[in-house]
Length: 259
Image (cartoon, rainbow, N blue to C red):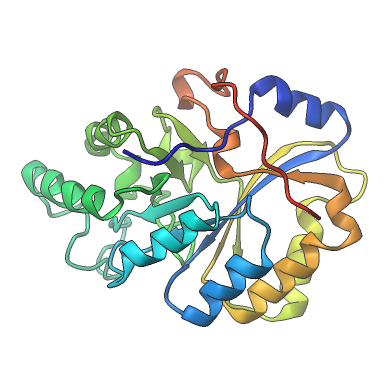
């Protein structure tokens, strides 16, 4: 089973937005490939920021252990075929088109075994959203697999609102490409919670992880703009999907960043 996760009540979320601040959660995709960047994230980026990891990492158990020791939520990426599987190779354990139901079950079991101890799973790849417009996660065939994920106690992050998620988890609000220049990243962060904007809930996913992305994220979280929001773990935004949008969440303590 996944470790206990940090959550806050819906009432607390409402209190935050009523105070005039937005609620921001962040997942950094591509964590664990580089020891240097792993260290930088864990030492420089506030704890509520979560990490996304590939199930194909050779040292996955160690990477998850390091993240947990640093009080990070962890989300393992499901290798899932897009609407154009001929364009992207999702590896030998991909779910989706071309597989029988039994094969998808087998690959899901492999992914779940890799994700042991993680907070949840996600279909968001390091390069962004691969699932809208007929991606496998939007199909009825995926729903039974989603139910299995939920029954194992994992949260699920949908990258696209087109997926019609009906299990416990979160849906990403926006994506920032981490493989770009500092000026572009600064502009993207500035636009995320602009001055004077109506308070809202934001789940940001960013990837791939790069030194520049880490630098600019750290700078943004220490800038005056950070006064406009409260940073929370992604699980703080969990709901029961389209069947119970923003449902009441189990009462726990909020985890905020020392900005």
